View 1 (cartoon, rainbow, N blue to C red):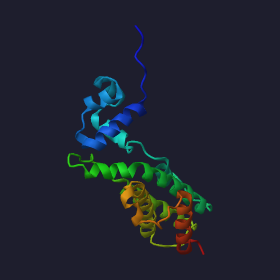
View 2 (view 1 turned 90 degrees about the horizontal axis):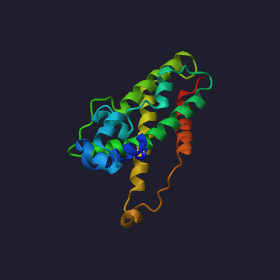
View 3 (view 1 turned 120 degrees about the vertical axis):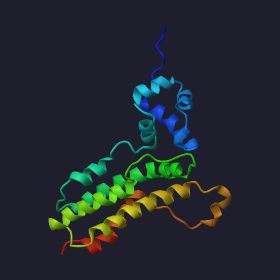
View 4 (view 1 turned 90 degrees about the vertical axis):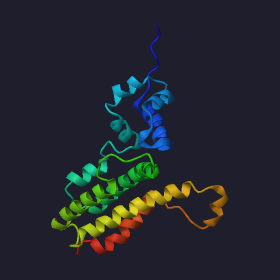
Length: 202
């Protein structure tokens, strides 16, 4: 008897993501299994609980690399380059995950599991990272929390407005004929260039 075709975790997550985005957290694992072409038991061999599947499907179960950097990296004299790297990774995360999170929050059947929202997590970690840089003399003394809010808020806004712009129905596209999109790397460069004036060491 031939073996059943193997299915990857990502294929299961793609099916789960579709069901959860359509139905909220109450989406059925049986329906997810049917979409993925596997048994419901197969799902729970890969993901211990439905909540674990839910978090993995919307992309917030794993800790992004930039979060690890903010939590543990010791700032150096190359802090502008370090900030660029961290912010670039953060933009990628928010562009991928936040539209899903926002869509889930609009579902009447859905309630996100208890968790620290990424913007709050990132603002706190960024504040602590900036404090370490200030203490080491790599940044000018400043209100680190305000700077962190500015960076995280700008990145979150950039990701969300990009997602919204990409979903504007064609009949309404004429309303924004002069709006130009900004490439992520240019956005990050301009954001940090603007902030650098106020936080650069003397």
